[in-house]
Image 1 (cartoon, rainbow, N blue to C red):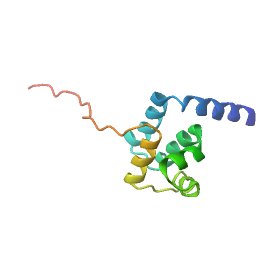
Image 2 (cartoon, rainbow, N blue to C red; image 1 turned 180 degrees about the vertical axis):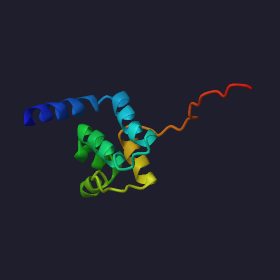
Image 3 (cartoon, one colour; image 1 turned 60 degrees about the vertical axis):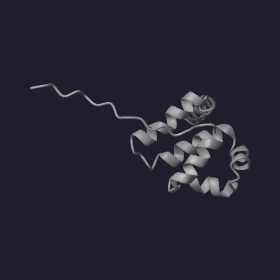
Length: 104
């Protein structure tokens, strides 16, 4: 079981180095309004790119990053945006797709 989990984690880390995959992974938490998962998703992407490297590029202490990425982390919007920028990701807002109402 540990080998499968290790293989899964290794595969996930490899995929998270791809900006398109990483973007979709983080956006899942945002779109689903899953603020419990958002810090974990950000942490997974950060780990895939290297926490030390991110800390240096973002100018944020590694210890602070680990606290942000904890499941109990509650990062501010500003900090999330700063971390995403350091990971070469951006937040995009677009209209929600809705079903067209049928005319009576």
